[in-house]
Image 1 (cartoon, rainbow, N blue to C red):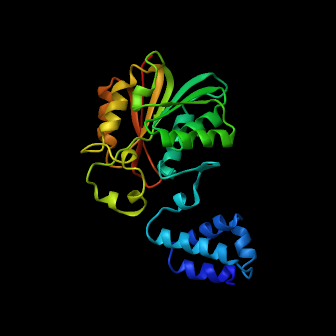
Image 2: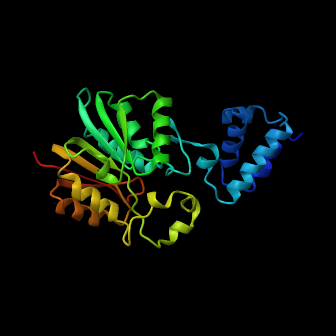
Image 3: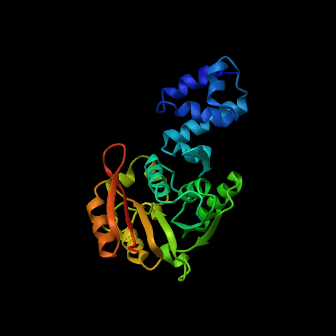
Length: 275
């Protein structure tokens, strides 16, 4: 039977750094540190075969997160599936900016439009336990993943609703903050044929000829759904900052600004409804 070191050595030659360890730890149900401490341990044929199959699927382009069914986000682990986008570090910036606008210890109403796996909604609900958070998505399959994550993480101040952007929100609802990581890639963008994007849900990535259709709809309806002084924050493409600021201004939002990510690229735009 092959050893842990042997199968890892072979897989490392085919995959990006760290991926072999993630996949083998998933197969064995162990921590990555166990692999380093037990390199001479023998793998039973069934485990070796499962690992080889995952390596082959990864070589064919299937994202590691879909192979393991998990992706870390902030300080917790999320279940993901091909029905959801894979959470990314850029979205952690959106959460941090949202939390800076949500006072601790107050009852608040918050919405996450297009929640996917629930990354934004669950992060905000966990950090602000007195907030009532609404997580929406047009995909029933995505909502099922988000609900399962909320249950597993024991976060109970989140409600879920199915619908396309504002259609999932009650007309009378007014929110202290609305956050969204909507689709913002333009139709026909060549990046859609590269890397993990080839396997992620198309409707969660692409939004019209310029990538801004979803943000237009979200910004356009914000003034009717925000409480006075409430904030709208959206993640967007690095070349879209000026366009999104214009959409926010056209929608009547004030104090509009864009925050850059760690690479110095426009990433999250925020604006508020005047009191």
